[in-house]
Image (cartoon, rainbow, N blue to C red; front, side, top):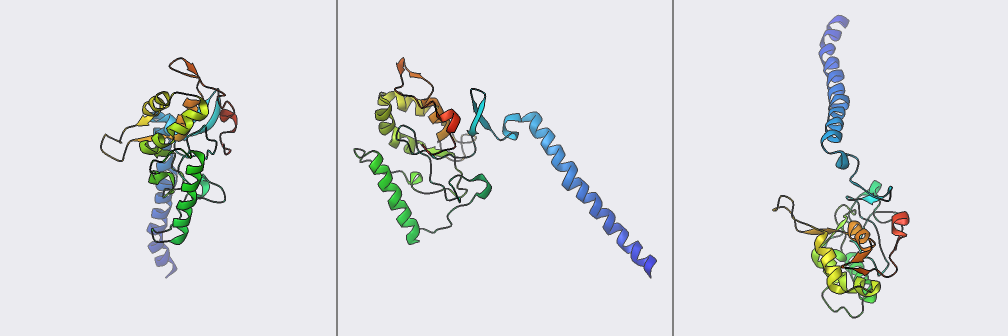
Length: 215
């Protein structure tokens, strides 16, 4: 009886060990090696570096509140915004009063930051993404904020709009999604120096060292 039981269990145990080794060790190792070989930057987290220091990732949003920077989408992660270890959305439906109140509060903040801007507020500036980590905003959201950023930095509006255009990514494969702007990369470009020969007033050099804080 015992010998028959062992004979019956042996194929199952061998399959368990082999599949565990293949799917738990060999396959991840192969994917890691191929990924680092063919796509080293993406495999390392698509990190953004400035002056030899890592200031963020192209894949994870960061919070900005200074008027001289572009603001990203709201984040529903906790206990702080854009917490990559707790990626999540708010899970609030369009009829949820809490969502309506949050949107109203965000609109008020945007209006207060730029009282003269009477344009409609783009929806992605007042709603969180499903991941809570979206590093991008729509082109419309960037254009909405351009007058405020230009005024705060003492720059011509067309210079800021040109910078938005140069930092706009096209649809994936020219078909999927919509054109988008990476907020961190755009803000770093703003701090880069001059626009068509005009120096930025009081560039935010602290961004490179404290970009994970709120501005």
